[in-house]
Length: 138
Image 1 (cartoon, rainbow, N blue to C red):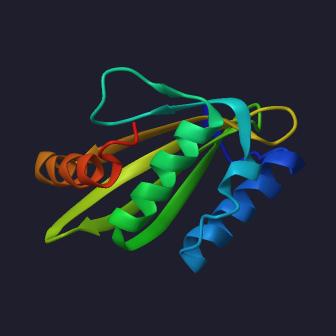
Image 2 (image 1 turned 90 degrees about the horizontal axis):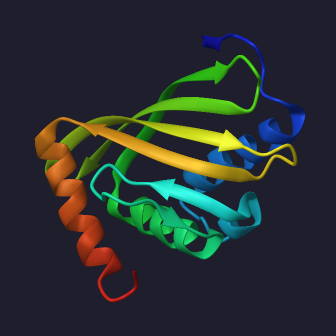
């Protein structure tokens, strides 16, 4: 269930740091926000990517692939440990909308980051751009 409840203070601090990185277009500090066993669930891959290094590489690549990236709304889970962030962005000449579903551990570190994207044309453009950006690294 989603509610207007606030995130836990530790998760709030991590989310604030994440938003600052996105605004600055500088995700160099991202590894410090991730739990060692963090998991990324991609909108185009069948299996999740595990480990902080893999999650950081994917999110840093996505940050470079997107243009005009903007967060619009956020919804917090009842337990204060998860947030859903609605966003819009462009990938090349394709516009897309999506959500980031982020779950935090008790220490505020990101333990799970899942992305969903629409429409299919935007998802296809994102998949292609990410494949190019990650070629030989995943």
